[in-house]
Every structure is written in C-alpha cells, then in structure tokens.
Length: 99
Image (tube, rainbow, N blue to C red; front, top):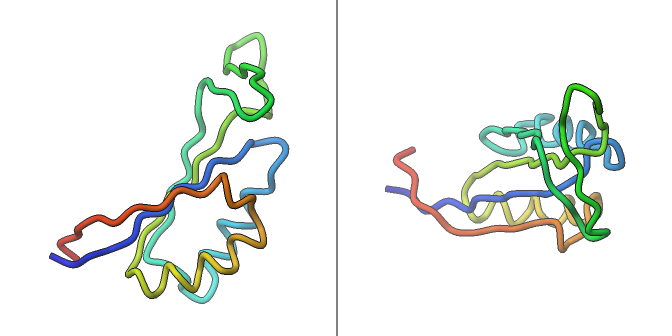
C-alpha cells in the first residue's frame, strides 16, 4: 500500500471555470487522474439552494473536482491550484492506494 493525498475542490458550474483547472491538471501529467462530478442539488456560501430539474436547467449547480497522487506531487500542484481557486473550497486528506 502507498500513501496518497486525495484532493476535492468544490466549485459552481456557471460561476467558476472548472474546465480551465481540469485542463491544467491534465497538461504535463500533473496528477494521476481527475474526476468531475456535477451535483443535482446543493448550496454554497450564499446559502441559496440550487437544484437540477427538467423545468430549470441551472448552470450554477455545484461541481466537485477530485484527484489524487503522492503527497509530494500534490503539494506542488496545490501551490498552483490555490492561485486558481479559493483555498476554503479545497479539501485534502491522506489515504492508502494499492497503486
């Protein structure tokens, strides 16, 4: 088992340019892999509830970007990510991987 650092970043689909961050993480093999999850419901700092429905195709739904790599690689990546995203939108934790 290897120790890895998991990173989860909380953004808003319409207000944040999450594609720019994902493209940057992909370029030059920054991390092992990235997943983007689009929420069906949620709220942020403004406490305004946002929902996905057939009647309302909101572009402000919550989006979560998740990725992992070795602690050393993530430390370097996070230095740059924190210039692109508010630091309080980033959550990290240690985990074990069979990779």
